[in-house]
Length: 250
Image (cartoon, rainbow, N blue to C red):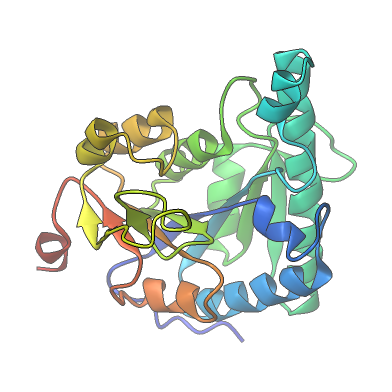
């Protein structure tokens, strides 16, 4: 049974999951073990009573930018990538069902046989009823990343924060996988990330979040229990916001 021990800090959040993470240790496709892992992580977070929306990438199946770089028409490549996100969303919905968590998939590209069309009022109603809503199909237009889609959906559903789950534990001043001396930021502003040109997400997603005063938390999805820890307000990952974290807590 879902408890309603909702933390004061977050009532509703938008979680961005990388499609690349869905392939697990594979070179391509969807890893069932990772699906089971992320479903249980979400189950723990959902049990706290927080309303959760999710946007998933499609890079484990098809990456539009890479395909365009190899000569494919960019618009066609981006639409193919959007369809890949629907495949990931359906797989996650199935995994959530198996652990007893209710969810709905909404897609910006109409395919009524497998998912609801994206309708904001319906999405809000699902969230209020305690269902996780998985937003797929990007925002329905080419030339936009899933990070930008996540920032857009977070603003639309009036989320308290935008959580970006990655393979690293926060934002660094350089790539920590390439530079062992990279320094991690515990907190930083949207504007500083744009000015320092840190590779966190694309500038459109950052600007949209900044304009809507939407804080972002970047954290590692690979450490078990991190979703629940963040929802409880534990200081993990990197907090991105125009107000310092100490001011938000006070």
